[in-house]
Length: 269
Image (cartoon, rainbow, N blue to C red; front, side, top):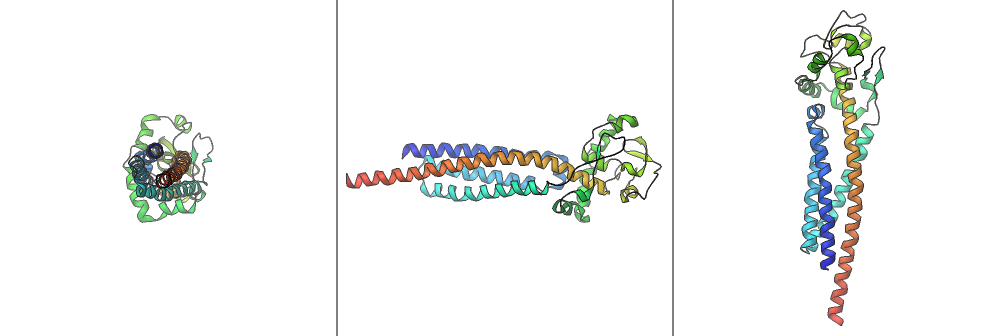
């Protein structure tokens, strides 16, 4: 029994280590400017990682100190957490399965359309009371000001590979026909009727295209890229956690069998 208990404790210690990439993924998302403004995914990931850590710690203690009820608690609750983590992995994949950038004439960067993205993601940014908060958060960052420091000439800017968020929020859509002065200052639109965003553009540095659908689409494109990266980490962790859980179940069953056999020998031999 002692050997089995030590094995169970060691297995659950490894499960504790698997909580680190989950918590780390949530913290990484929270440090990204767009995710920190939207505040959708990072806290569920962080909370789930902390719960995995706590439950694995309970299993670790139950294994080394031979506390059967604590091991049973670990087996039941960890199964629930694995199901929640699997559901989160599938959900993130589904909501980020749509949407991509579009080429603009004579531009190296891509432009983005809100309708390309999943309805669930669009609802996170389309409602005015939500977007007002997100817009204020985005406008307080230095992402657009950085473009002015990096690109002084039009052709350099047109050849730049800027982020989806910068493409959507810091400049007007290419089809509007604005004339470049600097990356965040444009004049003399040719076709203001080409897109509603053409009318939303403002040279006021706190406004720019933050009210545009292209800005919302750029935000979703950024989120998609980061969420997909996070989803890969969570998927790998999920597979490892399932393997550890199954090994732990086998070790727990063997420990129970060993314990029953020991009691049988004590009673009848």
